Image (tube, rainbow, N blue to C red; front, side, top):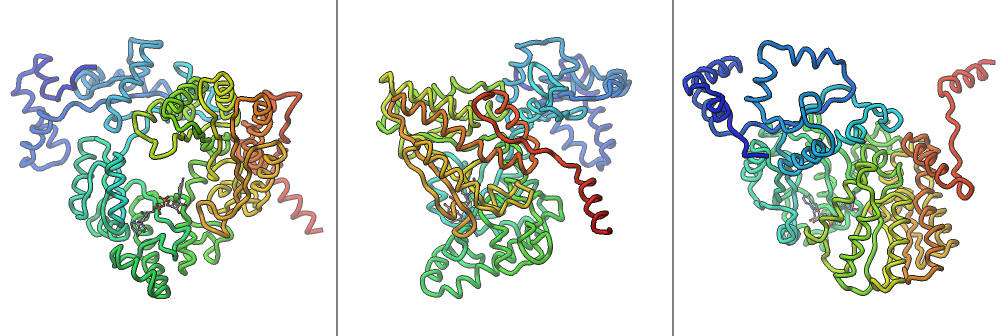
Length: 555
Ligand SMILES: NC(=O)c1ccc[n+]([C@@H]2O[C@H](COP(=O)([O-])OP(=O)(O)OC[C@H]3O[C@@H](n4cnc5c(N)ncnc54)[C@H](O)[C@@H]3O)[C@@H](O)[C@H]2O)c1
C-alpha cells in the first residue's frame, strides 16, 4: 500500500492539466447543487484530501448490477476506480486472488481502521450459517462483520478521578468539560475518518440535551451509569455537581431520590427525542430502562403499563450478545495465574491463542486478536489475570492445555472462573435471559441448575448469589472457580464440568427456539455422540397450534 493520493495528484499523474482539474471542480460544485462561491472549497478539498480508501465486497447479487457498472459510459468504471477512489479490495475487479489477496484485505482493514468506505453489494446469505455464499474459505457474513467495524465515540463521566484513570490507561485520548469543544473534536475526527474516544467531564443528560439543541446527529447511543444501584449513588442527577451529589446522598436521601427520578425523566425524554431523529438507543445491561420505569415513566413499557412484556428499547443482550455470542456459548471465560508472575500470564496467553482457530468464526477471530494484543494494551491492572470470550469446547480446550502446562512445570497453578454475565450461569430478564422469548426468561432455574451441576462435578468453588450486574432482586447467578493443580483428577472434572457450565445455557436458549442455539446444540450432539446429548426442541407450527386451539374453543 502506498501513500494515498489526492484527487489532484491522481489527475496530474494521468496526464490531465491543472486547468482541466479546475474545470472538473466547477462541474462537481454545480452537480452537488452548491453555489459558485463554494468552488474554492471544493478545489481545496480535492487538492488536499487523500482519495477515500474503499473496500468493495459482493454477496449474493444479480450479475446485471455488475454488468451495468462495468459498462457504464459516464463515469467509466476505470475512471471511478483509478481516479476517484483508492480501491484496495474488490471481489469483482481484482486480478489478484488467493491468500495474498485475502491478506491484503486484512492489512487494509488494519491500516485504515475506522477510516475506509465499505461498499457492500448484494444480499447477505445467512441460512445454514451462511454456507451458500463463501469466499476465501469464509462466509460472506464473516467478511462483512470483519470489514464493518470502526467508530468515533464520546463517553460522558461526572467523576473526574475516573476520567484521570481512563486517560492514564489510554482508554480515552481527549478530555474536556466544555461540550462545544467535545463535539468539535468528535466532528473533526469524523471528518478525517479517525477513531477517537473523548471523555466529557459532566452529566450525560447535559450532553444529550446539548446534542439535541444543536441538532447534532448521533448514530448509536447507550448508557452505563450504575443504575443497578440507582438510589445508592450509582446515578448522578443532572443539575448538581458530583460533590453535591455525594453530600445530598449522605444527608438527605429523599431529596436525592427525587433528584434522581427527575433526572431519569429528563434523560429518557432526550433519548426519545434523539431516537425520533434517527439515533439507535439500546440498554447496556445496567438496568437503565428498569430505573426509568421505577421513576414512574410507563411509556417505556411495551404494554404501556408494566415491565412484564419488556421495554420499548432493546437490551443489548436481545440485539447483540444473545444471538451473536450467548446462543453459541461464547462468554467471558477467565483465568488467574496464582504464581503472580507476569511470565506465566504470557505463557497462558500464547497457549490460549494456540487453542483458538481464528478462521472458524468471527467471534474466534476477535478473541484471538484480543488475547494477542492484551499484553501490548496493558490490560493487567492488578492480579495476573485474563478474560477471553470462548464457547464451551473452546473453554475446555484451553483449560485442559493450562492444566497440562501446570503438570509439566511450565507455569504455576491457575484459577479458572467466569463472569456472571454469561451464557449459562445467570437468570436475569433485564439482561442475560432477555433474549429468551418463550416466557421462561423470568425463571430462576438455569443459574440453580448450573450451580448444582458444577458442585456435583467437583468444581473447587461454587456460588449461588443474587443481583449480579443489574441489582439485588433482579437476577440469580450461579458461579464457579476451579483450581488447576496439574492433576489428572482435575482433567476429569474439567471434561465434565466445563461443558455443563456453558451448554446448560445454550440448551435453554435452544428450547426457547433461538436459531443459533439450536445449531450449536445439534453440533454439540454430533461431536459428543455416545457420551452427551442435549434434547432438541420439536418446533411447532405456531399458526397451526393457534388455529387448532381456537377451533377447539369454538366447539
Ligand atoms: N454490559 C456489561 O457488560 C456490563 C459490564 C459491567 C457492568 N455493567 C453494568 O453497567 C453499570 C456500570 O458499571 P461500571 O462497573 O462501569 O460502574 P461504575 O460505577 O464504576 O461506573 C459508572 C460511572 O457512571 C458515572 N455516572 C453516574 N451518573 C452519571 C451521570 N448522570 N452522568 C455521567 N456519568 C455518570 C459514575 O461517576 C461512574 O464513574 C453497572 O450497572 C453494571 O452492572 C454492564
